[in-house]
Image 1 (tube, rainbow, N blue to C red):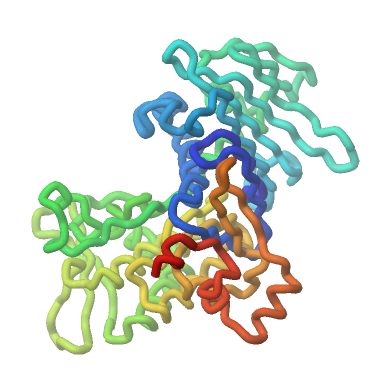
Image 2 (cartoon, rainbow, N blue to C red):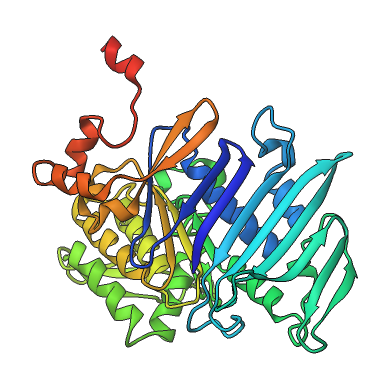
Length: 410
């Protein structure tokens, strides 16, 4: 799990720290343009960089450092992540916290990593053990075989944790790469029905037939929903798949079953379902409502029992009925026992269904110095909740800030 994120000079995040508690999803609330989604973007940047390279993460997905650096800022962008090792991570160093830090900028129109470090907080020791210490192109890496630091020269724009991958000598670097790469960010599923899609979107919908291929986890936009569901049904037929069906059919009780017939074109499968209201008629994904498809995407992302270190969702309540949101919050709270869960939301329903809102709610506030992140006083919140729901407290301005100028005008 990722237990702490510290970010400096990334868009509105001039200097923010976010801490996760086991069993409590992080719920980011606040007005538009307060930096909520930027936190998710930082996680996606690192995850993508671990899998595809840092250069691609910065230039192919984000068009350069200046597009993500805080406006008017010249200092390097800084990202620090603390990883809590736990059962199931075979590369973890004795289940102790690992801290990964990255400082980068752009020099002469070229991506440049200023520093990159890994520190392991050994039990019984006041000072953490430095495993990786990189300055510019020069790095020192602890070799567990020789117990000495090896000197390595790296490309200025490449991450050490991605370039140095000899597990027998440097296992902690491989662990950091594995954990961060297995962070999953979902910025919103493209679930529109065919009539609401632009002509350029017609062939990239979660509803379309998909080429049969094992899909261990649904992708960030949901285009591989059908193969992800099929993989759940075949790989976890006694655990995750029955649970998904239970939560889906409980919300949509007219659905008798879900199944995956082959597409007549060959090599593809489709999502089909039976509707009790139309006996004997085979229905297809294109005939599902947007809420049904959105809910299936969310269930697929949450219920797959893989080793995702963090799951992040931007506005997961879109298109979802309050009863489904209640189920969704419960599932995310269960998931947060083993995986860091982060979500942004403007949904009052999500707030009202939180079991421990004081632990979960993180309020993003825009200030002259960028975003600040605050939590509520737990004792005071419990006093308020005896009389009000969280949605009512929000309406009264007791949670996140609102546009006072507009309120005065109205």
